[in-house]
Amino acid sequence: MIRAITGRVVQLTDSAVVLEVGPFEYEVLVPELVRRRLQGTEGKQVRLHTLHYLEGGPAQNRLVPRLVGFLTTTQREFFELLASVNGLGVKKALRAFVWPVAEFASAIRQKDTALLNTLPGIGRSTAERLCAQLYRDVERFLAVYEEESAAAGLSADDINAAFQTLVQVGWSETEARSDLEAALSSGKQFSDVEELLRTVFSTAARKG
Image 1 (cartoon, one colour):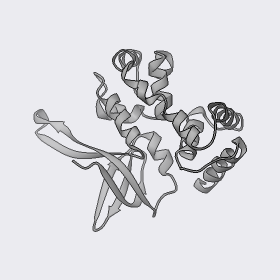
Image 2 (image 1 turned 90 degrees about the vertical axis):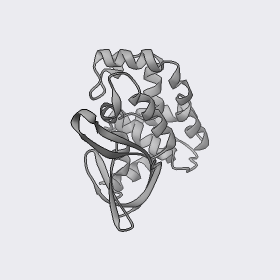
Image 3 (image 1 turned 180 degrees about the vertical axis):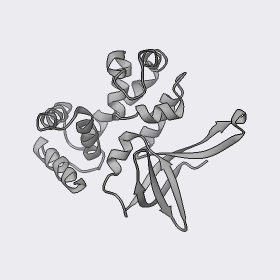
């Protein structure tokens, strides 16, 4: 089983990234959460933690090997949990995985079916199944944001203040969550909210 892959980004599409690894090129499917983080990385080396599965079945007389890529092992573990929900599976989980792990886990833990219903491909019945089946399983993912913020030298209040600022200046809530998670997981230490915001703004400017 292929658990990770490192290569040069050749192409980034709406649903996948093509990596050059030696003489080979691999297409790796990525959820929107990861795709946003890979913008502007063409020509650069990236490492993705992968999930390897077979698409199709005996009835179709065709099995196609697929790779799904994530930036962290936590993202991969959470995705596997999502895909295990009855009626969801890998394809629907790929469409739905647009929020940072802690935010997604929090919505499930709070049984916020109205919020979950806003995710791509998630109807009311699927949102209810997510809450019913994963309510207890997601608890270990709730602290991801807190751990990253603490490692970056900031508090939860600092992160919330940065989030509110980004939304006020035009970021969507999804973009704000994603860009903050990217900054917090970079390993950099921040002295205050202003430094965190400068990093987010600088990264956004480089993406164009």
